[in-house]
Image 1 (cartoon, rainbow, N blue to C red):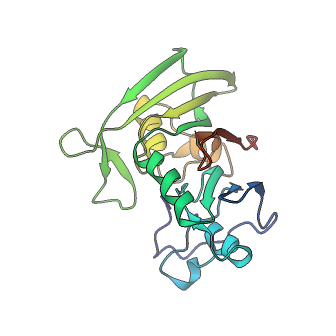
Image 2 (image 1 turned 90 degrees about the vertical axis):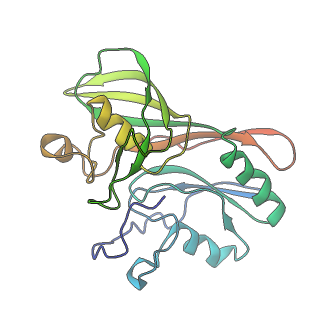
Image 3 (image 1 turned 120 degrees about the horizontal axis):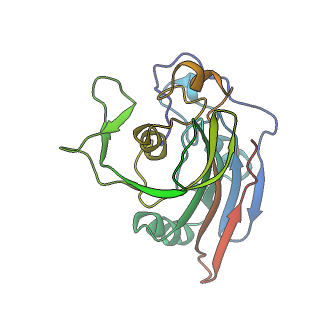
Length: 222
């Protein structure tokens, strides 16, 4: 989901490259969305520029299948017809797609791998932020693996088993290791350690409308 509030006066999406097309066929378009660009336009006119808006200038029939937060980069799939949209969207809704993200988090994660299983809900006092809510939250699970270490940071591969808003960002905070550059959930040195949110949707696998199994990859830019 888009992380930007319609009331947010600061929105300066990247223009170069304007669009980064990874794949095109009769049913689907796959793009590498940059950090800082909304997946779909907001209600306020200042938020009209988005990945979908740009794509529909060239492909008016394009329909978005899923979204990434404004500050998250990576693979986004759109459909070129209703049948393709229904078949792929059903896989997202049924949680049969396979997603892999790369993140840089603050501090050293000592355990090699693990699972965060904590329910999430909107934070009513700090919208659009979300929080762990064991009383009213929706179930959310994230599997993670350590990829390597840097100075005061750990590189993780994240596998969201559910698709809640801000799931990876809130789960990493709950793990005690916020994602670097996260303007919503990090502060101090962790916020200043990067000039963007270091979260990237690197790989996405699902069943193509033609019946084949496909995987699309966008190289991690950090």
